[in-house]
Image (cartoon, rainbow, N blue to C red; front, side, top):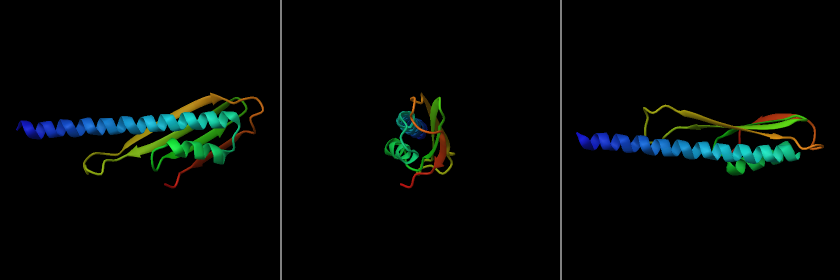
Length: 114
């Protein structure tokens, strides 16, 4: 009786570690994108910066105006080993002050293809 409970606890712990890892990838990607957008880089360059750090299949949303640049990275985590475990949506948003003369206001959403 104790062995199945131990396996269940181990599975939940591994699931939590995986969720934290994907959340950290989303945070890192959003920060990289917000820095790039605040510097005035093109939206394509911002998406490339986010794609280098984002988890596979993440959805990226970028908005830049004269005062703030905001990047949101959303990913869904679903374990391949457990059919009964629901998908876990994870999201991170980073905002940075747009540098003076950094470009024109822009907004875009993109689903990276990797």
